[in-house]
Length: 182
Image (cartoon, rainbow, N blue to C red; front, top):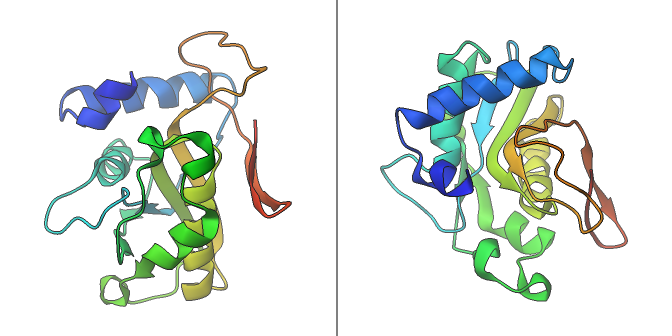
């Protein structure tokens, strides 16, 4: 599933998103959390110019199936950070490294939004999302900021119940690092 998501196949991705959303809504998750919000895709680990990245494609798919008002690709990388997927646990970029690498492109918007939802493909600890939320909070201090990730890694003590197992949780700054529950 992760490989298919990373490939961002234009026919497979919208079907996956629709299926996950229907499964989540059927179990009472995310009741209207994306309805009417502006989606802000989280960039990958390196700056990309002129082509959509996985989270951006994911955000556009969410909008196309009617789950958001707009997509604002305003968050950009100033410089690359180490790719977390291939780094040992102790060598992944910190929240502060991610934060320093992000910038907001103000040319993309003409008003201060009320509700923003960061969109990412996979969440592990939540460092990237926490840093991205910090940048958005700096640019839009009055906005409600949430996050959506299509896939999540499992904690050591967590068991996979089924392939589609949506959940709601939170990422917090605790003891100098990001902590995700669940």
